[in-house]
Length: 209
Length: 209
Image (tube, rainbow over all chains, first blue to last red):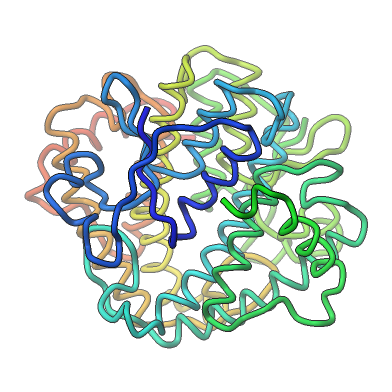
């Protein structure tokens, strides 16, 4: 297997943290996103979507999505469970993780990509160019504020986002907070539960991945 | 189990088609989205996110996401497989389905919700109000055009979106095309592979669900 990664990008970081928590290491290839290597003919043959992460299996098959890669790794290495151990647990964590992606991760992406100077004309990842929409950055900031407060309420009664153990939902939340930081959007001071959770989760060695 | 549904909404339709393909029936409760029943105190206790679909299990647990519900149903009723039968198959279908959601479904949602007269101030589903962004509707239309052409190329060599059998990725694509139709965005005439696929998939009895 070969893992196509970029150390500065948030999406592949989700996979790196997942692998670190599992104690699994995979041969890794860095793709230089800053210099446009994702658009090179060589990388397009691996992932025509021109994004990382991508996991190439030994038969050549490519899985080009962070969550799909994590699900695959979980099936191959079930312990420690980062998604769930029963159909019900998995469904709850997957639903929660998708809600976090939509209300938090995507909001942070909107807030960051629609104003970042280096991303003019590149408001979305992928093979097509789309102009930045400043109103969308503003909406991203508003959504993120709502997300932080909702998540703070959730964490009032839970050690981790999905309950009493660390899951992929914690990974998604950690990575989106660090992404939001690039758009100068921190967890608000009054969100004390979330700030405590963030300090605890950031201190895990996997967070350095 | 109880399935919270709304016959006119695209997201729960994905689950209805999935259930029809499986031959599974679940007690169903209609939520009247047009009259705001999703914001009622009674429904908020079921799903604070104020969205359908939501599946309430017998122990009271609620799974409030279309794809998470489908994954749960697949685990309980593996045949016919609509996601996959091996870790690798599942990873490929999940990655593809997520790409379709992002580049197609979300684009259609953006195109529709940011201009629909009945959705002023409600550009996003969920408990919070966000104003429509006309530029985002326009971007949605452009993304959808790219999506249709990419999918047409994909379907040149495949009977179904993921390969030689019908999967959740076909369901997502079918539902987003019908949603795009509401924003007067049809599959372009030149996308002949996709039009052939659409006619075939729409003719399945599950498409009436």
